[in-house]
Image (cartoon, rainbow, N blue to C red; front, side):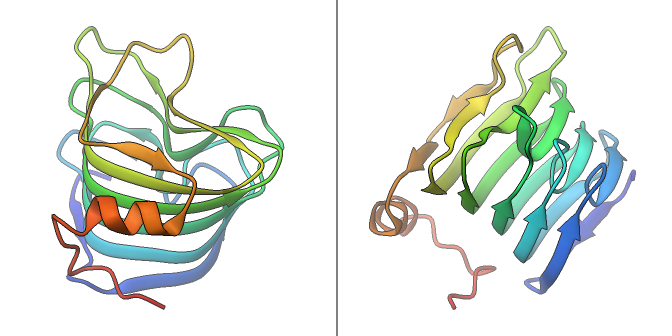
Length: 166
């Protein structure tokens, strides 16, 4: 994918990811913005949005159940590079007995950017920012929370008009 999927505030709901994400490869000029993905079930080690993400993810909300039995169940994408920008993203992830990563790998000499990324982790999984062995990501204004109250408190300052509460 080399274009931007701009959801204009709409929701894509009730689907299962069994392979390489919604798109296998998102180029530097591609990405997602202003969209919600809810009631997503992910059964593969690949990411929900893409297997390889070199573009931008901005103003996105994801509510998903991760059922991957792989030890590297990646949430957004498996790999990326210096052009990968993840900004203003809120994720509500439920997973059990899976070690999973927000982003799997970064193969560039320059860190990819994660800014204002907030994740609520529900379940007995171990959630990390990036996979071990990967070059680091620039991780700013971001965190992982174990309660919805903490997530809401942390994200209320920037507002998220693309998110519709259930």
